[in-house]
Figure 1 (cartoon, helix red, strand yellow):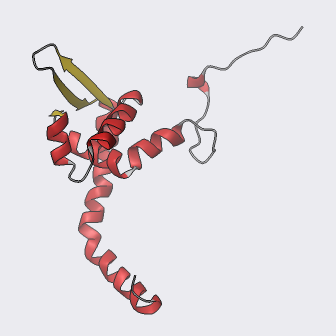
Figure 2 (figure 1 turned 180 degrees about the horizontal axis):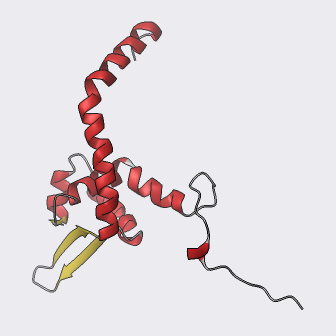
Length: 132
């Protein structure tokens, strides 16, 4: 009889380009519109839910809640409920979340800085292919 050996997931190589790789789901949580904006906002410090919702302009209560749950599950966000009346819940980045947010902010700042170039490219594209 053969003995089945199960590999420890920590010993397996991760490849985001493989559809079976669990890193793909985390990448989706981080790089989605609300995930990246939420991580970027939390990089500024601790937020209560409604403060965070105001900071991430345009996010619905439902989407922010889902985003925070996903990021907490991935170990990027820490949720701390205070036993007060009314209850107080604060959200902060974990060390891993901070590291991810640092990298995201580099991309965010690059995009903000290069938007004139992007807008010019859009104008050229629309001029050739017709405005949308």
